[in-house]
Image (cartoon, rainbow, N blue to C red; front, side, top):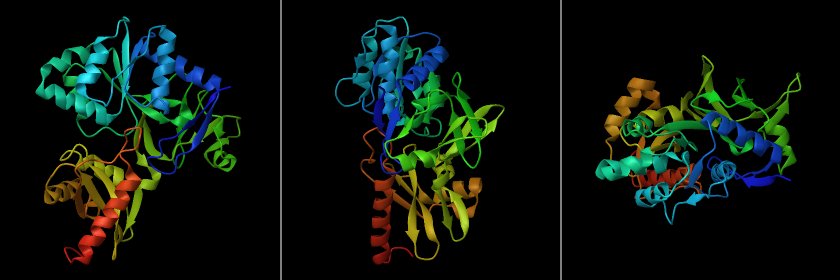
Length: 333
């Protein structure tokens, strides 16, 4: 029978993805194979998105009761959930925002470190981790594995750059993925034809829309192919800028802002108050002067989608509104 799962819509309109029972089973089996054994899981993610569903499906194999965090995600609630795990193998899945909260909490209260270190694996996915976050977590003795995938691949199917069992990855004009975990398609037949295709060998592929590279068989994802803006005739990767900016503000998101002369320019959104001058200098040094962000927008709370990812569409509208208002007031050109 399978299920229909809606995507988070963080980079566009949510899509309804059709997953077969066979695809779900293939994904679950491959994940447990890479983990080494079934185990008990803490569910700290929404259970109506694919990452949360995967936690449920993988936990079922162990026969142990699923443990859910209580209420809003906090370090206290998460540690309490971890401490209630009884299986000899213990796992969880988080998004970078959640891991960052745990790392920050542990820096203030070291009693959080030990319980989280009991987890055999913390799968981290959903978005690119801020610069240095995984290293900070590793120094606490926490075992982090970066995952990459999509609802269309039943979630993460590439772990730490290496495809799971029976998964194939190739590069064309974007990253493409094949394997038994692929979705049947979308509820929208036209979209299915656009994003899924079969090559001359009969192998079916999913077009991810992501750019990346394969180095020694290890996949490195550099960002969305549509996050490249044309600023004054020069193509600039917002993902590359964001990676540099997160050294100064770990929660920073870089989006496009309209500009009367250049068309679009990079803009930084963060809850912190870093120096725009320092950010521009660092970006210029790493990526060249044209990539320097023009604007810094500070928000009290970073807007996110229901799955915990930054809501980039909302942030884009916010930046456009703020920059237009400041331009109207003559604060910058």
